[in-house]
Length: 461
Image (cartoon, rainbow, N blue to C red):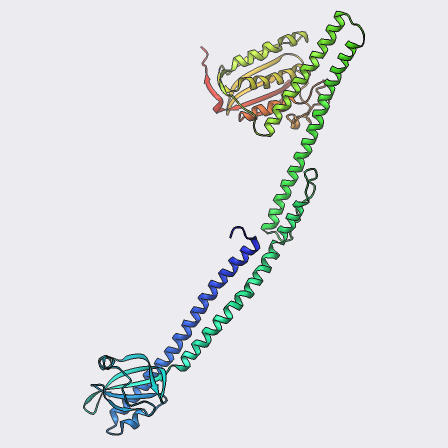
């Protein structure tokens, strides 16, 4: 059943439901007609039995003549079952069996039998009523033919048996046409989806006019296609930006090496060329690592190896790593650990995230760079802030997008992956990252881990 097309299944379900309705309605109609006909016949027999009984009580002779009156037929039996009088159309024998005669003498008795009437066997209904007449106990039996009643029921039964399947066939055809018409918008959506390609997602599902379930389905699919199209645009831009970012250090690396090989060089010149080449190679490695992190995040497979780690150790490790560069720039790095505890985090990833933030602060900011940790409502908060000009207001909404760089407030070189990598690492931990400007001046980036990451918090004495 599940392998059949939807329109076929709908047609079968609709036809089956109508068939059940037809069956119940036909049965009800048949039984209602049968009961109505039986009620009419029974009422007529009771009236006829009363009339014959009255005639029998008044007659002192000629009971045959009295019993013969009326539209039906009648028979007067003695208590022993002998025929005392009868209608001319009946034979000489009793129309009741001995046991039925005994039952009829006690109380009125109705019986359906097949007897000979005018020499022809007919299906009749008999009503036996006891009556006392001429100093004896008699049994008045009146009857009526059931031929017309049986014929009417037979005609109705034939009409139901012939007309029901014809009506069901018409219902099935109508149901199939209705299902096909109802599913036509779905078929149009299928054809539209079939025309879609992996590189062109600007096609949209056709929407029906009424605001029904199919239109809402089409709207949902169009929303999905719009999101897929936006995602593909972002991926194309990502590949384009990544290619551009990779091309620059590769070109510089190639230039340095070609210049070093073009003519004999002194040791100082070779050292300078190799130093520049190493710097570009490190930049390439850093860029490749960043792209790998973002790719794993996009696939939902960025692994997190959490362990209980002192937060202060991570802050001090990042500070030691960048102090030499800060000293070259005439700046300072300060650690402000107000958390004083341990957390269940991936220390290497969190250190990488903080390193990206400190590197950005040294590259784009001014003054002292502060690496902080504190306990806030909702979890552990790590922050990096500087004393520069802060973030440009237009840059803040897209600060954590890949290859997003500030053009005005923070000039300088960079791949634009630092904050995106921070966001990927923090998201993998179930946390959030935000960028803001703080008073009186400077930029601040906060990464917050949920309460579940907090392992132990020390109490300072």
